[in-house]
Image 1 (cartoon, rainbow, N blue to C red):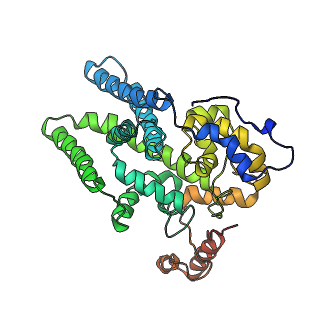
Image 2: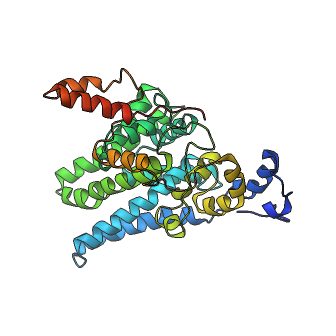
Image 3: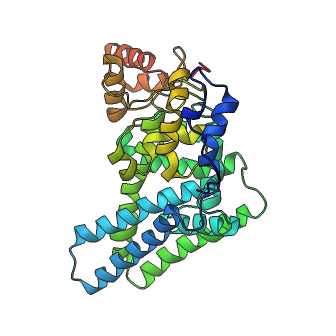
Length: 343
């Protein structure tokens, strides 16, 4: 990040709780555009290099398949952070390069950059809103281990809400057309085994990873729409690099233009503010019996009702063979209902 003059830190401010304007001075250091050469650019280039190496070694045949799949997974995992930062214009200070990185990452991931951008920004505008947050549906409508296929809901949401702007519908068509052409070429020229092993398989693995660490864990238990509590932080140096800062997800929601590699220092600079606001700063699994029960429920079933009574899931009870099971199922729906509030 660019810095001129003395950096404002919490040490320069009064000991008493500062105003939000004072805290804005603290965080401003991290809100500046990233430098032209930054870690996100490295991820973008590195992802394509790893993908190319995995394909090259597939045809050369000297490396084992698990290693090639691992390289392909890492390539797509890296591009997942690129597309995310690009949609917030935090990947590169040049607007056109930022867009190119976003589209390039989307192509490798098999995504559409306009869909990802518009749907993700809707998530930011309506965090934990059962009707308007598309990621809330992804996280609460099935078991965690099946979270990856639910990302297809994003495409439906994009068209159902007519979210595209200007040339984005054309961009969607080009990216989806390219995807279809690659698959048709794979069928015609007999390289579908490469697509299955080094693209679809790793993409499914990355979908599970992104779903858990970008959507599910940061927002559970999905009960608050308050901007200081609708996501969480679970500090860890190791996780910070493994999942590229998403363990500081609340920092991202509060200040979306901060690049992923600045989440950790931004969190450390603003921790007193988050403490004062009561922001969750732990993973929150198995800390209480209710926490543990809900986590296990999400692994096994994960379908959440949004009403204590007259749940839309009640009709499923009719499929059960006896009244005792039906009552238990309805009781479970009531117990696991998610009703977000503004608190």
